[in-house]
Figure 1 (cartoon, rainbow, N blue to C red):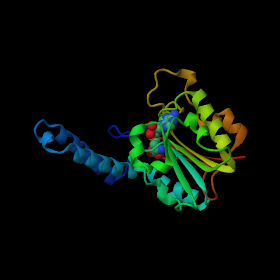
Figure 2: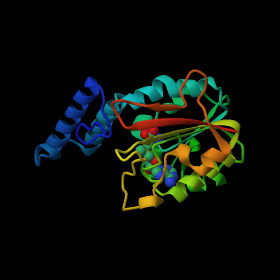
Figure 3: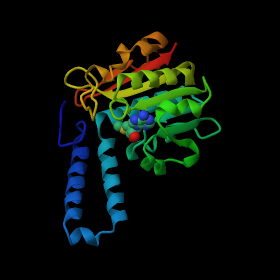
Figure 4: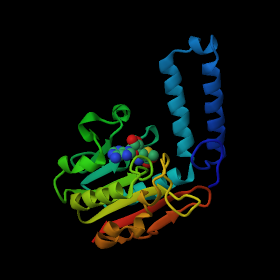
Length: 240
Ligand SMILES: C[S@@+](CC[C@H](N)C(=O)[O-])C[C@H]1O[C@@H](n2cnc3c(N)ncnc32)[C@H](O)[C@@H]1O
């Protein structure tokens, strides 16, 4: 993986500069006396802002905003579920028309990110329990960019997640999976306690995917997208 400092992939020049400012800011706010003079809320706000800027300059993020979200919006979905929220993804709902045309839902088991989303369309839960929030075949799109390898680390959980997504998507519904490819050719698991063969797989190699989904993107886009400057992979699937 092409690695710059401790961020997961290489942003462009402006992103790298912003990250340097972010790191400098963190050092300053940690100096005893000087740090104490800056209110905590202001520190957090500035740090979140700068980190969001950095992520916006990563190539996979730019692709998400330039190609994936517009392509999803063009499908005119009535209900979208986006699993996993971060400060730099909290605005993704803006790509979709407002209700009643489209419901854009988010879900994350991390309670801390709930504040980033309107509470009537955000669910705090494990995705393995998402079937209790939606009826079968009631979703047009499920976006799962990041959770595989960043919380959903075991193959059995990955298989169960896909099985649940399959029941919630309507026939022909779209499933977008984003994950990181490791140097060993397998998906990266950020906190791997030594899972070995129990670890998650490349989604295209999974039985549940092969049985129920086609590896296919909306017109004009490739089914798999990779990047020369970072390890991120996007895979598009459609429920057969
Ligand atoms: C790397 S972040 C990705 C966030 C965002 N989707 C993106 O595009 O960057 C992974 C997120 O998935 C969430 N997550 C991990 N495992 C989960 C699970 N089993 N159920 C719900 N959310 C989960 C984490 O809390 C985290 O916010």
